[in-house]
Length: 275
Ligand code: ADP
Image 1: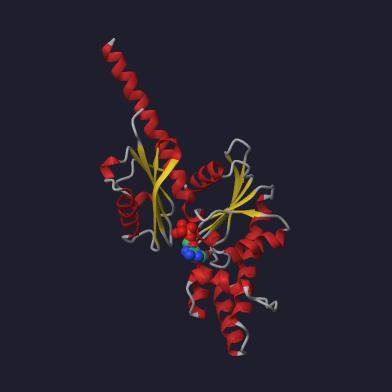
Image 2: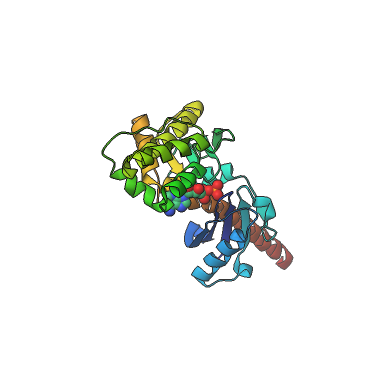
């Protein structure tokens, strides 16, 4: 069997992710660039992943794009929805998944996954930034910390402090006022995590929760949010350091399947010609 390579590109609203797979679903390279649709992010993510494995775009047997900006990648052989890609990627990583939460930069989606890995149902958050990565990005900026430092800060909280405003703009003022009143940043961050978690829990309850609950998307990189969701529901939330790549991984799996189908068709045609 030839050594097929396939590529999945997830062009999100906030970040661009690329995953390159070899046959048998082995991840050979991945790259994330923290800018998404309408920027140079997608091409930079592809270039980063190609550099990582020493390959060229022409070496890819098939390319699938997904995400908010999936229509914009002219190099893609085909495109598909991020719902389908997250379901596919999460099921490949965690076959016991029955409920899936994807929290990205500007939206959140709760999905029910059938025992066969098919997407059975889903709900999305409204157009509000609260309960998405955007809320956390805004809060990190107000607190003057890096987004990757939020989890560590929240983990050191010693006093419960709630952020009561559900609107991002009002929550921003509330955080500023807490800080002006000398609240500990660690307590404020833990409150921010609980606020995002409560939005996610509402979304999950709308779709119905069945274990195993898996979380994907960039926000799943924040352990504080993941733990707050688990604590609020009283069940474990399964995730992986690869969480932000799950959509691109699902797209790459679909591209790999398409590449295998093409290879099969090519072999059948050439066998028929020889007969
Ligand atoms: P999209 O697909 O909508 O562009 P992603 O699933 O890539 O979004 O998630 C982007 C979000 O992930 C950001 O808004 C940010 O809040 C969060 N994020 C990105 N990197 C990190 C990190 N190192 N630690 C915690 N959160 C992160």
